[in-house]
Length: 158
Image (tube, rainbow, N blue to C red):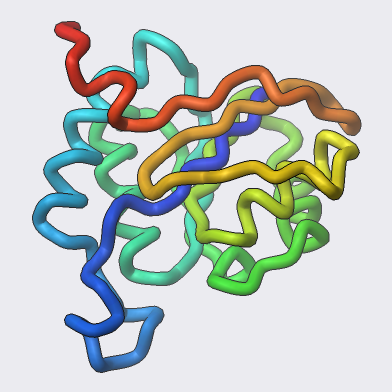
């Protein structure tokens, strides 16, 4: 099973957004960079299902990813909203275990804590930048097999 953990793209800052944080949208720059980044994904990853937090910025990120993977199933769940624990992610992994390639769109520090938990290294100091992807492979025990930040692919022509 391949798991992709994708942190939502760059959103408006909390200073720019005074309403409910779950409603905070992506910035124009965040949308632009996510589109460019995700355009290169099919060269690297297969995705069967996209599972997103219900926070607007995560949903927008997931929808941009779905544009590149139109045949992928799509689900939103409040279980991945900010504050999601590794246990909640494990429950979602079990729910979608019938798929080989699952992409989760979520938040920090939830994603890095979950990755650390899944690879069996709770003390791992993993930094997940906005819009980046971290790949794990495995079944019940996972191995970290890749991390890609948008900046790394920005200059690739493909």
